[in-house]
Amino acid sequence: MNLPPEPNDPALIERMQAGVQEVSRDIVALLRYQGFGGSPADKDAASSWLGRRSLVPAQERIFVTPGAHPAILGAFSTLAAKGETILCEAITYPGARSIAAQLGLNLVGLPMDGDGIEPDALADACARLSPKALYLNPTLQNPTTLTVPAARRGEIAATARRYGLPIVEDDAYGFIPPHGPAPFAAIAPDLTWHIAGLAKCIGAGVRAAYVVAPDARRGWPFAAAVRAANVMASPFMVALATRWIEDGTADQILRFIRAETAARQALASEILPPGSFKADPLSFNIWAGLPAGWTRSAFSGHMRSTGIGVVASDAFTAGGEPPEAVRVCLGGPTTRAALRHALEYMAHALTESPAAAFAFL
Image (cartoon, rainbow, N blue to C red; front, side, top):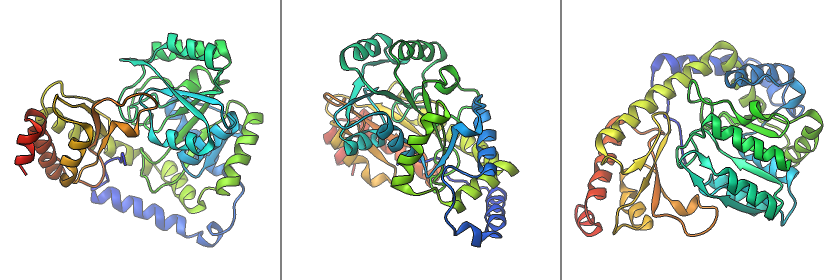
């Protein structure tokens, strides 16, 4: 899994624990069923959090869901029926692939360049395939680490508007860059389903996401779909997220994640051969193309003993032959010393033939 670095600052951990203790004072009430979509206080916290991405939606458009996965499932099932088509990046998030497969949807990957999906390819697919939605992970994309620049976002939004194509914006990493491009929900709010999960910017155990629907009416069937599958978000987790946002703890966690991620990316840049991977200073992973002689499966197996997650490109490819590439995760509970060792091991493999690298074992 692509995890953020875990906080290790005693003062920050103590502050996080204080939030848990404060929320637990109302533990009996938090064990009850809650109304779906979040209380007014939770939606106020969501509005405050979304404001960091220049979003100011009305509360009636905000839905608190039990994580990004249920939100994507709800959006896909609302927008498309079995056998219909949803577009995405050629290299895309595996969770979206799994959800589309579960729903019987046809997920079609679009060609990409250094700025994201190609607008002409999007227009051609809209004309040929009559898709029901476009799924994008446009900031620090998992796995390529690409952030779609503002100009390309405008082109994509204009093409989507021309064809009346809804956009499902998975903004899992959107809060990590302090000054990232405006989200699609700010560029084309009437087309966009914005999903702001908390797993990557606070912690994967906080199973909550803030969803902004294009309007309240279209949010009703979405809410029904999510409620049918999940009933509600965990009241305790949502209350904790609200508390941390209100008292500033969430911002402290986010600052820690940024600083530690930058330090780990600096290690990768220092140790790995120049030009051997794609990354962003604030991405939790790198995307590494493999030199001649290596296959993605052999390389993933070779790295298994290092303790860091290496996933072959097969998991991310929406269609066609996967490239000989792997996602290497730098986040999670590992230490910088352990990460350095793993990256040195990886650097050796990238500069040697597979036979010589395996002999290194």
